[in-house]
Image: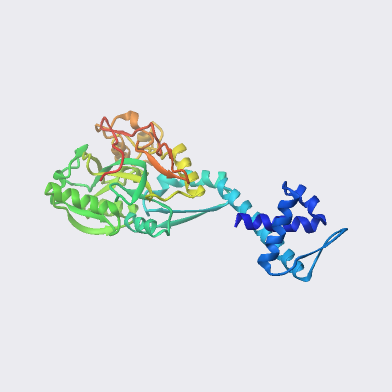
Length: 379
C-alpha cells in the first residue's frame, strides 16, 4: 500500500508540475524513479495516462480518471494520518469502561471530571453492571477496561485500585452491637442482607463463610447501598458493606463494626484482556488513575468521616447517637483518615510496546488495623 501511494504521489506531482523533472524535485527522487513509477502505474491501469510532448505532459482521458481517483486516495491517506495522530495524542477516540453500580462515586467521580478536562475530544462510554458481567464484556471486546474484584482469572491484566475492609452493619439491639471489631464466626446464624446476584462480593462472602463453617441466613438482596442501610436500621438483619461505600453518617440505631478478616476484603482492580494493548484513550485513563488514586475518607471506627464541626454534639439539630457512632473507638489508626487505598502490583499492556507503568496509587497504602492492604493478583 505504501509503495502504491508513493506511485500515485509521483503521478499527481508530474501532472501538477507539468513535467518529470520538476515532479522529481517535489517528491525528493530522481527523474528516472518518477518516470518508472508513472510507467508502472500505466501498466497497472492498462492505459496511457500521460501524453509526452516536448513542452511537457497532458492528461489523456484515462489519465483524467486516474488523476481524480489518485487525488481522492491521497486525501484519504492524509485524513487517516491526521486521525491516527489525534488518537495517539488522545485528542479523539472512545474510552469504553465498565463500573459496578456501587462504589463508583467514591472511586471515579473526580477522575472522570479531570479526564474530560484533559481530553475533551474523547467520548466516555460507561457501562454499569455487576463485576462478573463486566468481566465477560471485557473478554468479548465490548469494553476495553472495567473495575473487577480480586481474584480474577488469568485472562486479565490488572492494575490495583483499592483495598478496603468490610464493615458489619448491625441493627439496634443486636447482641454484638457493642463490639468495635467482629469476625465472620461472630455473625454465625445471623439474618443477613446480601447484594444482588451478579455482584462479585456475594461469591467472596459465601466462599469465605463456607470455608469457615459460618451460616448467614440471607433474608433479602439489593443493589442499592442506601436501601440496604435502611433495611438494617429497620431490623431486618446485618449487612457487610465495603468501607468506602459508607460516605454518610449512619441512621440512628445502626452500629458499625470493622470485619477483622484479611481474606475477605474489597480488593478492586482495573482489568483488561491479557495480551491486549490498550488504546491511547484507555492508557491515558490508567495514567490518570495513577496520578489521582481514590481517596477514601473514614472515621475512627472505619465508617464514614464525620462532616460536622467539633461542637456538633452541642447542636440540637444533630442526632447525638450518629455523632457518637462515627467517633466510636476501634483498632483502626486515626492516621489512616483520608488516605488513598491502593496496591503495588505491576501494570502491563500499555500500548504497542507493552510498556510497564506504576499501578494506580503505587507507593501508597491504606493502613487498617495497623496492617497495610495486600495487593497483586490472586491465582
